[in-house]
Length: 144
Image 1: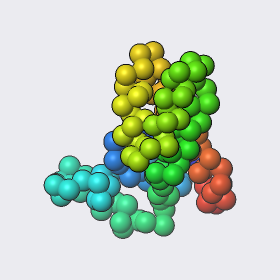
Image 2: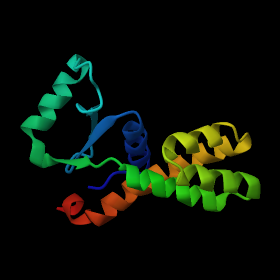
Image 3: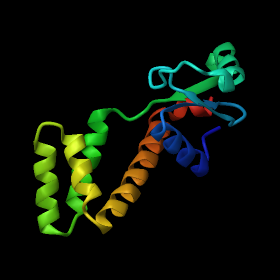
């Protein structure tokens, strides 16, 4: 069984807020739990049952990988190519080429008016596509 389109979107959204997503191969159940590396307070009480379920049946679940910083950087570069405002495009290219490209890009985008929303929409599409590609690259695991 493969994830539905809605589940692909949910996985992408959960990753964005620091969650790990596990997909049950046979039932299609999706379990999201905090990524232990991203949550420092260590209070996982609300997720204890799900954590236990996944740990006890690890081979029945597929853990979706989160995007790395290189992938996120490529997304920013790809977005810059879609910007039809030459001045803004130049500012974004400059932001990406300076030290601290993520912070610089964010600052320029946050002050870009309508392009801020375009960036959020583009970023969401890229996250979903990343999850979709992961399913395609590991299709054998989902079809067994």
